[in-house]
Image (cartoon, rainbow, N blue to C red):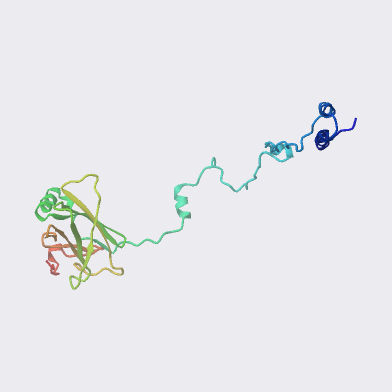
Length: 239
């Protein structure tokens, strides 16, 4: 039996209105299946991802590197430290040309506390590291704004330089604040005794305080130690 499309069925059913019996159209519709004019296409499905291991494709799972035999075995005995130091390149060292011409203030703690209470500012300690003079200064916490400076001369007070000291943040606030300083010393052969002298100033609450080592100033001496006593130097203090 030939297949008749939907269009043919509809045309024949319409012809029943022009002379064909209505039963003929109803019988024809009951026998022939109707075909839709369009068919919904199924949704395209994406292929699922698969994991492929390297050995499936014939590739090695582990890459082996062969190192040179020159690598040091950690089990081998290392050379002694003295031998290792000999192999290291020598560093150029520069011995300090100057030494302190006074004892550390903290060596006499009771005197240090007395000076700090009387002057409100006092050198705590200092040292020479290569070509640098560095140390710490204590001041009384008389106010929030403070200016602490180191006044130093390299030509027995013919001229001088004011070096600002840097505030050290404490773990907790107290009655005493600490400042640090660092200044480069002149290169070349050291000058005579009393050439390098320094003192400290502390300005707070519109007042100025000085620490000049009880009028003698702090001074440096040549590192060979051939010096006159501190009280014998003839350089005059600027204070």
